[in-house]
Length: 257
Length: 257
DNA sequence: GAAGATATTGAAAGATTCTGCAAGAAATTT
DNA sequence: AAATTTCTTGCAGAATCTTTCAATATCTTC
Image (cartoon, rainbow over all chains, first blue to last red; front, side, top):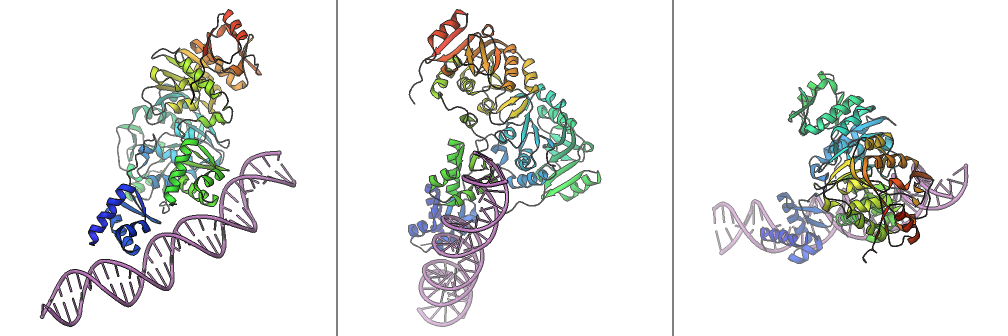
């Protein structure tokens, strides 16, 4: 049999079963497992098939119906690395404001050991520690914004303007030398209140946010004490930020999966 | 079995039960606990699963039933019947305050078709409609009370004292001719604020609450407009309540599951 | 069409990963 | 503080993967 034909048949077969073991494929095609392995390596290069220990499986564009996963699928590894790095900046028992958005969410995930007091307007973050007695969670009031699970509106703004915290862990849509920008007008007002309530402001921004400018202006760089990003951030902008006395932490690459 | 498949099955299983012990998972999958541990470590990296001492639970449960499971899985059928009956008392588009606790939670479940505005201090209720654009959810602020998923404290009280609503759907620990009682002092203050904010007050109480008296006094019967209960409620007390101009609705028995 | 070069295939050896077990460490409970 | 449960770590056996090599098939060149 022809190599190409064989590979086509493997892919076709996988379309039906989603996953197949080496043995299964070898028997199905009447060739040795070695050959199947080689074919799979080729197919993997094509992108539709992924090898696993013991076989191969179709790459399914996973339909992330879940509210927060939807935005999350991009730069997941980077965000996790940022989350870990940023969590290390938080001292034990501090009160921490956590902004809504996926990147701050990942920071919150790594915060449990610090036994912090978390103040947030993000429902996912609150759920994270809903059953934990280690972490005290304070939720701002507000109207629940459907898809994002964020509390917004005057009640939310008011909540934060009455609070005080050691640190604010923020996310945003973009950062340039002109400052921080974000897309949702509703969120900006809250972010401003969060920053006012906190002694120290940390922005967590993956590299795709660098040099990007969203519609709404949040604040200029003077109000930002630190930025945590990943290794993909453009070195030039990082240097410029540092020259403006913004501490920039570049999280190491995520460990291989 | 394949590692990936196994992990997918763990996550799937957790979607249903929200928490599972190591032993349970190991038995379910026919592998050792060590393997389950390792799988959980991987899944935890994905963010949807969280390890705990003795097992694992879902981070963003669809319905936070687990919060209540500890307290009462009792009278589930009755509570569902009460939920349905009470939901019928709510008009379309009304603003409804939903108290924390399992019985009001079941009312909220049947409210979607009414397209209400829900005001609550209960995290499980908020999660119920977090992804729905049909139902507007307003969450009071407050400190998240660990096991129950309730927002408490001055911020919560304050939130409700500033609001207005058509109806308040309440739960409690007990009802007698002397009034409503509840066990948690922290909750009572909030309940009082809720009732003040609402035009009409409905208490949802399964039959075990009748004639029972908890530690803390909430309010007397004058402030209660209606009580929804199930068929097990003692007829005598029901009559007495009616003689005091409290409307009492007895929900029919729940259909078999 | 034949001889040599190249590619493909299957099998075996060594490297890597996965799994289950057990001992010591850590956390939780009484 | 002791006792119990649960977790981590190290290890050995099994399964799987990669590398290597010989045999066969295919291609190129004359």
